Image 1 (cartoon, rainbow, N blue to C red):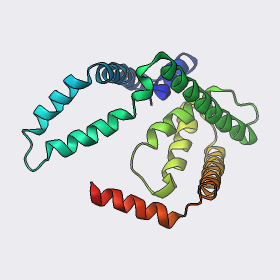
Image 2 (image 1 turned 90 degrees about the vertical axis):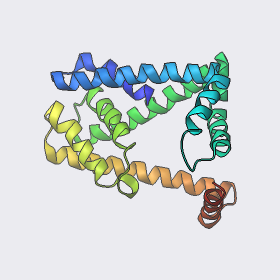
Image 3 (image 1 turned 180 degrees about the horizontal axis):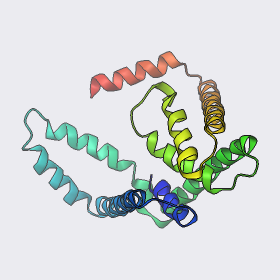
Length: 208
């Protein structure tokens, strides 16, 4: 999400953005900066963060501080890769690779519908879609993805609505197909089934 915020900030000089939209960009940029500061604090002051968490949990009724502390430590273990400069560079590098590849897919498919399109519209659409997909919606984000994609092309760039809708539907279909194909390959690679994964997920929920 920090990469998405940075992408929007980079795009702003190349777009005619209304003042109210610029206000939201500033807000998201500030939140992104605070998130970086917060992650750095949690990584460098884990003991202090745990004491603060336990003090907060102690005042919440019907909550087991020990159980939530264990969950907190499990969560923070996911950030262990950022404890070294090498880890930070690897994470940042793969983040860039991932987003560049995604931007390329948005651009390539949009060119099939609007041949003279530049890089700004598809990248802008990608960033807004990334925000939209963080909000709980329909399974596979069907309908929501199309509505958001249409607005990101029609409102700021004045593209025809029919082309915008057709592009978004095609993009969503190819993304959905690619993700499911990769999922099937992964299941076959590790000799798993959807039933086994569902059973493991239910087991984890019961333990929680």
